[in-house]
Length: 173
Image (cartoon, rainbow, N blue to C red):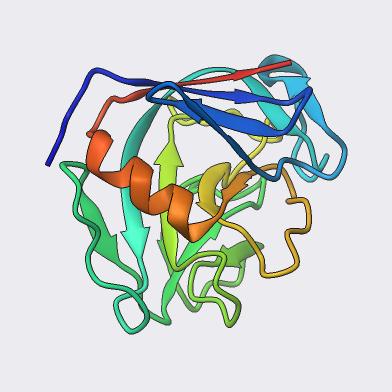
């Protein structure tokens, strides 16, 4: 397993993710990008800023545990992520069922088969500044996201061996 102190750069202008000297297409928010401090819950924009990768999730019934130094947690049907600005668990992992607004991490499409969690609005979370901003797998039709960065499974498989907790990610205009 090759581990570098790589930096990952997502460029909103041309919808690419760049790492290890290569550039790959990616999907970003439907409405483009926005400086992280000007983002809002549900704005469908990818937050521009500097981040770190915290940990990952994977769907063990569909994919093997990723080969990476990044810590990965298997997803089950009761896993979610709070997007309710009034919830004390806003922009955090939660267990379902939950009466508050949330995203389900267990999805029928492939998008959340592998998720990389970044430190967007998490220390501490500011209600309304945006939640559940991940790097995850692209939809089959390569549609844009609700604000996340989505990449093809092959690109994800090339990225995973290179990352660890704290790998730097910059999202630029």
